[in-house]
Amino acid sequence: MQSQGGFAYREDEINKIAKMISVDRFSGYLSMAKGRRTTAVLLYERNTALSEALYDTLQGFEIPFRNAIDSVLSGVLGNDRYRTIPMKPGQQIAVQDAEDKISKGGNPITHGRIVAQLSLGFWTNLISKTYEKDPWVKCGLYRAFPGAVQQLRLSSGQLKNVSISRNLIHQRIDSIRILRNRIAHHERILQMPLDVRYGEILEAIGWVCPTMRLWTESSSCFSSRFHSPIPQ
Image: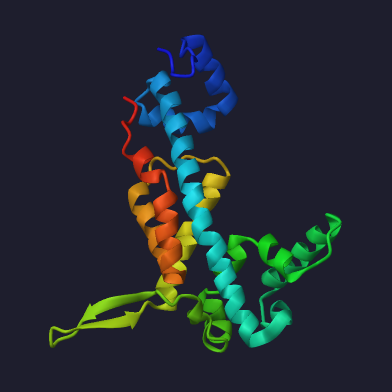
């Protein structure tokens, strides 16, 4: 068998690839391929292609998400917002670490650099139950998600728009964070319902900014890659 790029999928080459990937990492693909080693390598390639496609979509979520939170906090607390929120020790350390990394890189500490340096986990924690009173309620952090509404049918049969709860927003974003970290660490994601997860990411983008959702979806290559033939 030979790929479009001219790579020959010979047994000796497959064995070298499997060794370099590592036995533990390759075993998951080998199980999905029911022991067929060439198919396992092709599944690995598919995993890479879908991870790449989803990473673009995740970028369309992560940057607007953190900027929306920062914008709300800025309007309420001003420039010193991450020193004003009563954060847990882990969050405080994350801010200090971000400043240290910026300084060690020879750059002046600016708020924009701090925002970019803080992890998705940091921002996700800010909307967890721990911070429900402050800043979710006290600072109105829910305003970072103007599109987070759903329709409920009343007993009268009429539809009513209601805000999606902080808990459901946090659950969704935390699941996105987990997927993002799996992709960032080159882990296997083929076992997940990726078409469903893709839709969930797009929906979460729409909670922050519907325009951003449309733009991200229009430029995404995920759907075409997901519906391409699965290696057999």
